[in-house]
Each structure stands twice: as C-alpha cells, then as structure tokens.
Image 1 (tube, rainbow, N blue to C red):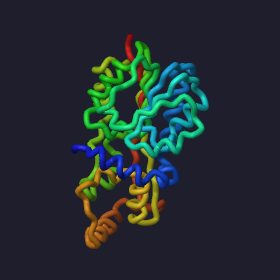
Image 2 (cartoon, helix red, strand yellow):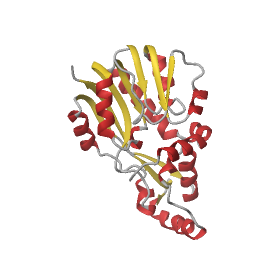
Image 3 (cartoon, rainbow, N blue to C red):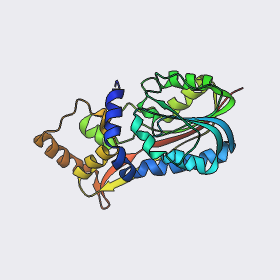
Image 4 (spheres, rainbow, N blue to C red):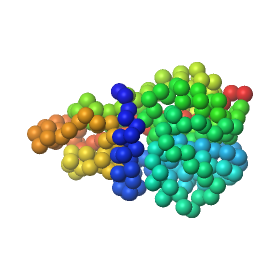
Length: 250
C-alpha cells in the first residue's frame, strides 16, 4: 500500500490535542522502549535524532535520563513544537524523514510508533546506519502484522506491517548488530464499535483510510461485524508493538 505522507501529516495534525489524551497504548510503548534504551545505551550522548517525535511521549522520558548536547527532532508538521517548550538544545527537522538530509555523526537515533509509516524502510535503515557513528545506537518501536488486525479484517484498510523476522533480516543486512528485538500484543477494550473508530480517529491512525468513506449502511455493517471481537471485557482492538535496540557495527 502506498502511503500518502501529506494525508498522514494532516490527520496527525488534526489529532494533535486528542492524541495526547487518547494515545494510551502509544504512551505505554514509549515507556517500555525508554526502559530498554536505559539498559542498552550509554547515558551521555553528544547528538541524538528522534524520528516522528509527535507529542513527545518518548522525548520527555528520554531527557529525564540521558544527557545530550544536541537533540534533532523530526515530525511531519510544524505544530508539534508546542509540546517541547521545556526541552533545551533542540534542532527541528520538519518534513518526511525519507526525503530529508539526516544529520551526521549521530550517537543515537530513536523513534517510537513511527517507522511503520515508512514507504521504504530498508533504504531509511541504510541512511540511518550511515548517519550514525561507528557503534552508534538505533532504538525504536514499530508495529507487527497483527496490529489493528480487527480493522483490517473488517475493512481491508491498514498498513503493510513488517514482521519481526523480516525486520531482523533488514537490520542485519544494513550493518546493524541487534542487541534486543521483542514483540508484544496489547488489547484495548471499548464499550461499542463506534468508540473503536473514535479512538482511531483521535490517535491519527485513520491516515491509512484515504479511500474509505463510511455510509450509514457500511457503518451499521461494521458495528454488526465487530460483534465477533466482543468478550466480557468489551470490544477488542489489538496493538502489536515490536521493540528494537540495535548498534551500528564499527
């Protein structure tokens, strides 16, 4: 599936404030990634790039533990700067990271819940490898094939997620040593299928649904079909995070 980056930027910009409130799973994922970064990465880093900083879930955690001289923050739209007024030594890289020139001689590149939006991940991994110092770190979370599987089953809409083994292979092919790669499944529950759609809209992830237009009839059908994902906790929605800590070989 081709990804319309302009549409992605538009949907996330629109969801900017609601994202902070509703992106509970993304916040948990950032916290887990931060724990792994603390275990594997040195505390003092001269220059760091974060890809897809969003509302700063990972950034704010990162700066509580790590020391850095320069933090390059990337996102698709400029309004994200409102979430970072308390952080010093920021340089902004606004735009599609796949098109931008990357800062060089980086000690680390980090990213939480963003790399699934890339159209050519192997090429970006290659460019990240070149931008890192030898033994520099790449720490990120992305999503695996079962992410939002309920939505894909019912609507056919969704990203083409990279599986853990494929991701591992891509990293190794681009010259990374994998220090940690783990996956997890998180279920969120809602009181009605309508709430599932509202949650997705509030977190910006409907950016894939360019051609999907709901009608009264298709909505009712969706609500009816979603009954299959109901249990005693409510209507289920699955997230499938994958965590990676890798290091550029010398």
